Image 1 (cartoon, helix red, strand yellow):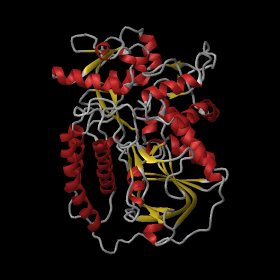
Image 2: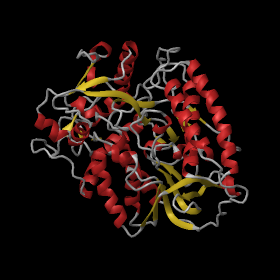
Image 3: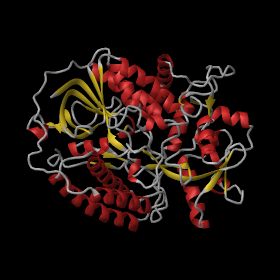
Image 4: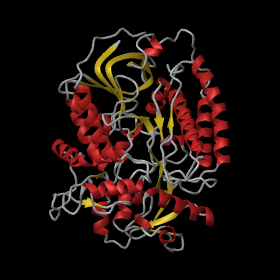
Length: 529
């Protein structure tokens, strides 16, 4: 059995932040199902929102977050995150992250403005902030003697007390599949952290990497944790529309710097939908684009920033400029074809301000968690900020407790399963799930569509459950199992919300209730394993 003081499942910004804050005093394992940089954090383009300028204030950032969250943000949590934002950014700068500098700024770094923000407060590293942050932290993680990185290892399930006949409501470790050898390892830890990101791959079109399969949310739910607000899936308004471009995001900052959304004939349309036009929050912009595409039978709309000087665009958006140019689109002279795509999971495992879940010794941080910060719609560039603040908070809470004695854990039992005779079942079910989720549980929903999706999910759950019980686990099977469960949580949550609020828009319930409340799902603890 492998044994560590703390095991972190996931290697995004939340996981690496946590690992580095723990490593000087704890033995830490970072478990990641591909390479260390293959998560969504590395894909983030825009930047990190924080109060850094004299023209800004915590009250303004809090207000913008609450407005975007449509009445469901936890004000105490929001204040906690905002007030710790500057400290988090200064920590990143101290680690060596090469943010874009600006001698004319009172903070010394260039700040941009994105949709929903009242001022410029987004610090960035050109248009590849996530990659700059992650590569900097990756080097430190790999160099630290107290951190063990287990790449190409995917978590199978948590080892809870209920599962092994020990203290109920406590997490003792996790089973992990070594994707290279095909063996399942038993890993014990005094504290275990879910930092696996979101579930964008439950949809056909997404800006997320292939790793975003809802693993942590599904594992936490199976172990007995509450899950909240899973109906609020953020669709990014501007994903590049091109047959050879997979999941390439056109940053919110393009609109923040003056990009204009247009119909194919060049007509602007955002002012028809919201007085904030292109700088409206993401849910408003995504629904507006969806409306115009469906109304006019369009494959896409266009984002035009060609009126800006070429030097400005090449300097501020080098990654976007280069990628588009590879596909024959010169953003300095022509508009960019864009469509909405699933981008961010606002709900997740319920945690407190220290990242603690309903299970003893189990934490959740980053997109996997529901902290109360995002409410019904995440404000642009608040996600990486949340990763930093809660990664540090969870580390501080873990360090307040001394590691306990090692507990012997049972090995993974493969005595009653065999190798699968064919894999077509998995690929077929994966494709079916993502297509009906896109069609029935997308930007605009109806009760009928949700019922259809629920019916399909029940059938897939039975089929996948039987497959899981009879065959050895594989990476694809584990991801599909988690995706189907996450899809079920999304649909169940959506069916419970009889209103339209934030990212959840229902044609059958178009009005917003005067008093908003969270959708909290709770599993019968007797069934939790």
